[in-house]
Length: 104
Image (tube, rainbow, N blue to C red):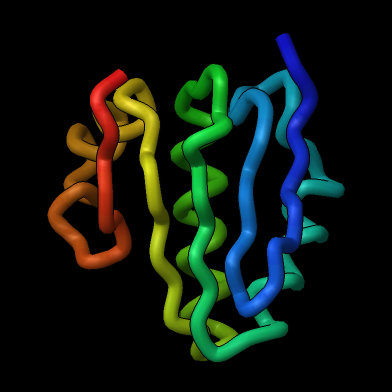
């Protein structure tokens, strides 16, 4: 299990690294979503996510809610296959938020 980090790469581009799981997502993670208010367009790159579960999907949904609230254009790049499968179950994969899904 590895921790969760959200790194600002500049120009509204953020990289999420580590696990998106119940063990790594907490109230601080939700509080840290304020970065979604810092730009008109934000891209979250998930290519460095190593493990995910339904808590990861819940975090994505929370990001979407924050983005709507702050009127931020949000997109997710490099969705891990495991997380994409969870998104498919909920119908989120049919949105314009997911721009690229690598083979994993």
